[in-house]
Image (tube, rainbow, N blue to C red; front, side, top):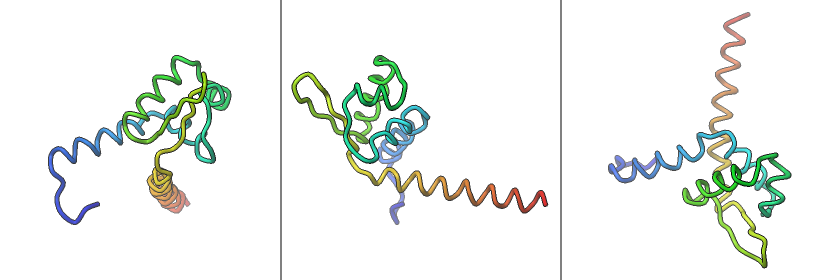
Amino acid sequence: MPSRPLSPRQIELVADRFKALAEPSRLRILQALRTRERTVTELMAETGFGQANLSKHLQVLHAAGFLTRRKEGVSVYYALADPDVFALCDLVCGRIERELAEQRRALR
């Protein structure tokens, strides 16, 4: 976090990014794109989502700046705009693991 307080506008922008990540389906899409770009068809096969549902989530992730997209012929390819999103996921997962370890110790 910055060393100075966030402005109200910055707070809104950060909150919008977190809202985009708050949906498990969107995290599944990001995970599917972790290693390489994929077409919408590939993402449908990878996630099991229908086209309308997938398109809605891709739009949200793209608008929030998490994805890039490019068109090649009739195919649209999506890719991670910045893999640093997984650093945030790693922080959260690390916190969850520590909390679970504390709970296990407390239940012994």
